[in-house]
Length: 148
Picture 1: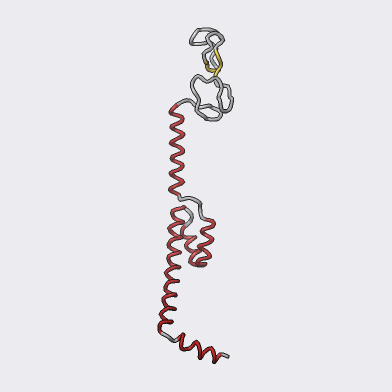
Picture 2 (picture 1 turned 30 degrees about the vertical axis):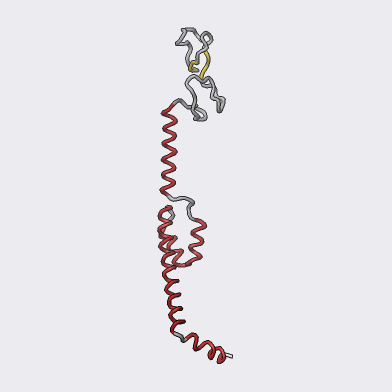
């Protein structure tokens, strides 16, 4: 049986074009493997995910290591996360600078609100005489001089 396959496949496998095709496929696989290692290193570095470790995983386990990395890698780039945090801080500062906020829920409020419309916390009391909003700790109205 071996002789029959050897007779049939022998001339095909000894053909220089088949040998060239086999060498080109081997070269492609080596370049592809190196490209996977390089891509994994760069992607893990940009995501803050131990690039040397994941590159080593891809070196050892090739495409299976790369697939594992794709499953467990951080969902966003480190620069994007940093930019998002800066934007959140900037908006918080903008809110605090722009006006008063509720001490309970930190939502924006107007200076003359008696209660917070969001969480219903009592913010000020009403003057018994002129009905203007007063701070809770005030014992006299500064507008009409009435004792509270």
